[in-house]
Image (cartoon, rainbow, N blue to C red; front, side):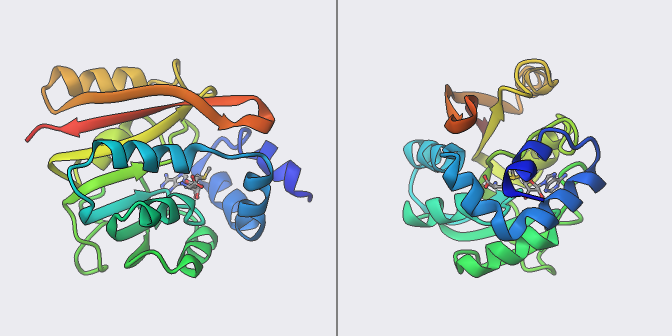
Length: 213
Ligand SMILES: C[S@@+](CC[C@H](N)C(=O)[O-])C[C@H]1O[C@@H](n2cnc3c(N)ncnc32)[C@H](O)[C@@H]1O
């Protein structure tokens, strides 16, 4: 299977099991294929967090960290300590090679994170900042993931994530965010539409939520 078929497959997977197989198969060539296609979202998310965060010190977690592209951008911006979590062991192996994470571990964002992102596993929730670049997709990271992620964000902390043309609006994320805002749990503090994978003509929203203090 060629690299190009793997990028196409990313928009066809329907279940978490198919997602895991895709990313395990793709791990070794993911970076080269995404760079070739001009993938912008990890850097955009890191730039938004850098613009909004008060200071860079304090634990930050990269959820659905993949091969570590967003972690590397966050490290360049001075954030740390950085932890990362993903469902694919293959992608976690690539992320480990970047050397930019303190702790890396497996998680399923569709399940409550309190029992997964634990101190025993080397994590340090609650996090001052959380990011999820290119991760939210109804096939494998449903809108309920937003509430799961907010569980491990500290009061006043930021959650920055992307929603690409395939999933927003229409994927249920807009409603999940509105529900949290109506509860007074979060405020949308930033939202911008821009490039995602330019060589494929895809754009994405980058959104930042601030958890109530
Ligand atoms: C398109 S990649 C993005 C990786 C990285 N954030 C980046 O921007 O390069 C999506 C990642 O989300 C992970 N993922 C998908 N569903 C997940 C879930 N339910 N829980 C945890 N990770 C998940 C995949 O394994 C994959 O590494």
